[in-house]
Length: 599
Ligand code: ATP
Ligand code: MG
Ligand code: MG
Image (cartoon, rainbow, N blue to C red; front, side, top):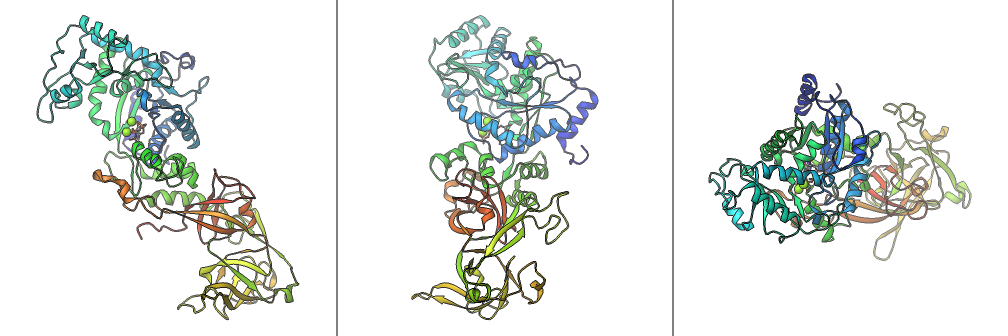
């Protein structure tokens, strides 16, 4: 795809496609799942990638990068991307997470289904195969059961520059190991009393090759396999096998797995040697993880925020989870643009949060309907209204919902073929305006309401300010003005009186009270958890401010999830959980109109 910026992953894939690196492949299906076998034999020249989350939490913006990379590459090169649950760690996993991950990936706009198969893959489907693979390694002399304590194993593993020491159990015969391993599997040993280790090299410079554990005893109920197993494969053993069984070609992961690559290759070479798998094996490539300023991307730490009630759940609009971003008003298009824009590199760096916000603004600019909302209301009374317009008269007004579209006030960058819908509202004797739009004594350069100044009520009339009323404490209770008849927007007299400013407003007669949640960054520190800092300490005490606003009827009639530009204020979304169309509007600030970060 020529419109996409090239990167090292694209270069690797293009070269593999050109060389036909995977042309000899024959789709074998995945053991333990007939549905996948029935999926047939896809074009062997295709690439296959995968997104392999562990279902132990909700996906976050970092995962979104990985999803966009894996699914995006498969899409761009005519390949397939698998959604696979890496569910080898039963205690921490749950179907609640499985379901939310499925929903998040779909919502982002990606599809893993293939003809006859719309189920995501799951590592636990391969437990039988993994067990056979372990027995094979034992028989071939590549694995042994170690009965040292965890502490003994840790000490004997050595350190950088200090070779490890062989376990006394390392020289057991394959027959002895096989008996022990079968006892482990049969439930004859305590949790933690022994592990199966690969037999590689206790002096390797790469500590990951110093006989890593590959199976452990853990009496835990698995959300998928129940109590069938009391031993579970370690992630480092399971993952390469999952990739190979699914005939993944390019296994893309974050840089912290670079040191695991030699083991990944070692294991697959052994299993190909033993004819349990066929060549060519998948290859692992690492890219830089996403680090976003003012954001934490660690499921464990995000879970802490949820369980300690620092936020209101995984989908709190301040959370960088995909469900949180969605509730905040982010769109799949904005997140995909973001992933494309930050690119794929091989070295870690920090991305500025404003980059993400810019992508949302770009997406909403031409799509979000405009509306007027008064966030800090004070009443404006048009004292001559009854005389010049008629007592109790309500004058209908309208404005385009999409002013950039044809028929709108301005033209230009309009989406092709979009005709702007029209918003209807009324003006009467009393309207709500922003408190900041009136100054009794105007500061220099102030162009809005002050005694004897004229402004336009946007989409309504020109008015002239005459003063204000105050309570006993000197607090302004009402702003007073007179309407200038014949100046209604859209009528021939609209330009008869020149003004320097137009202000937003909502009629008292048809305005609706709305709860508006103004969000700010969740952390005050740009790198809240860098260098082992306690991120709880940098929580922003003012990350949520709730105000009662008055909104025009078109906003009150929004459906949950509808996005708007509140004129002069920013982009807002009708909350998908709490907003009730018509009767109880609730809006979340998605992003301001301008970049205000770092200021
Ligand atoms: P966490 O550390 O938040 O628990 P994880 O890496 O353990 O995340 P997994 O469920 O194992 O979570 O992740 C699935 C995939 O998402 C992995 O391939 C992982 O590399 C990738 N991923 C996780 N975090 C990021 C990130 N910040 N940037 C890019 N990719 C990420
Ligand atoms: Mg993980
Ligand atoms: Mg992790």
